[in-house]
Image (cartoon, rainbow, N blue to C red; front, side):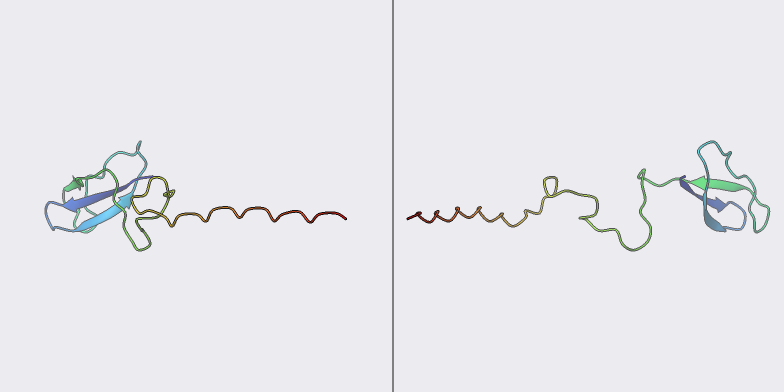
Length: 83
């Protein structure tokens, strides 16, 4: 479920809340019962918190950082001659 950001027009109280897509928008501030407005971010996804790295959920093919070349497979050892 997405997290929505709201701010009160009257007292300036700002908060985030997790709501379903089908839930209606909040209209009254929990602090002063004033009018709320929904804040919109400029991007569709916002990662909050620690632990998000550039290499998370990526394979080495899609990354711009090249991996170390794999070692060539070793040649099989010659078979000992049976006498």
